[in-house]
Length: 139
Image (cartoon, rainbow, N blue to C red; front, top):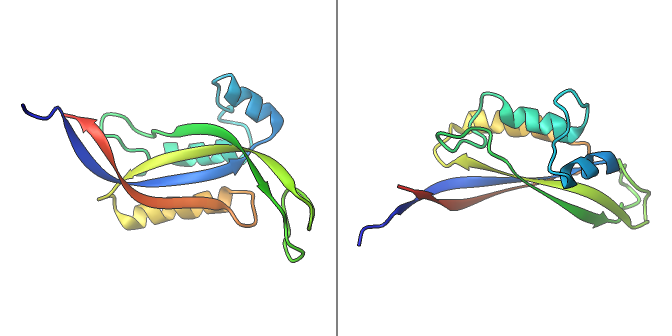
């Protein structure tokens, strides 16, 4: 029996992005913020949609897996939080973007886009993960 799938090496870029209540409400209705909305999420989505290897699935481009969640944290006394106050527990509404990048994508191109994502992220210490993984694809 021949296999009907193949394995594709990729990097997974996961970005945790704070959102306000109206944006969270949009996401919960299955909608995205407008392209002209000045929010970190809209900016990061625009960066993924630009001409780069992020979200490249061959026949599909700019693929983003988007989930919603909550994040809790306690800013330290030396922090300059975007949300909350030093020493107090804070809860942030969060959009979680998972973006796959082909393992053979030019590193300089990937680094440039990640630099732009970091610059667009509103948190003092952005939570952005990069891991190596593999995707199953049809043959």
